[in-house]
Length: 160
Image (cartoon, rainbow, N blue to C red; front, side):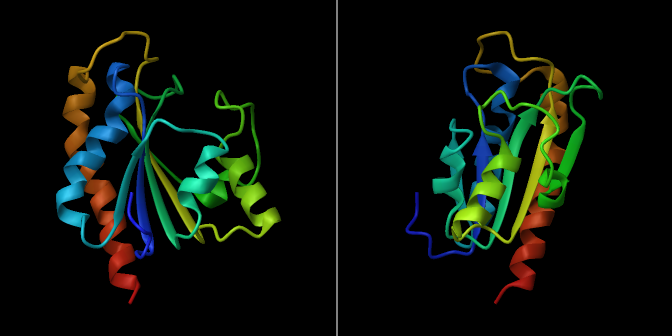
């Protein structure tokens, strides 16, 4: 990880041995080359309160991750802003989810990103141990990466 001189972090979350759960990690690897000089690209298997330490000190944070809602087909891109996380709507499988992390950071006065975006790629529940992405997720990777790049370019254009 860098010394955090940059104002933007791309945080990729996932597990690289649970197949499609690694979609965010794969997206970050694709984006790393284009943004490595302007954006801190961080890959992590961490979740919950560990995100406080990872995200502290940045002005903008884009999280790329997989999600399994069961409400949309695998490969669907879902986008959330920090406004979507102002209210806890259910328990997190990570003990503390992003809503709790944001609330705690604000309450404790931690230098936390003023803008948090989550770009999630819908996957089927990750039950298989494998190191490859399914065909549906492989097909969705190009538009997923393009959307993440668009968000990062927008932030870079808006910051000095």
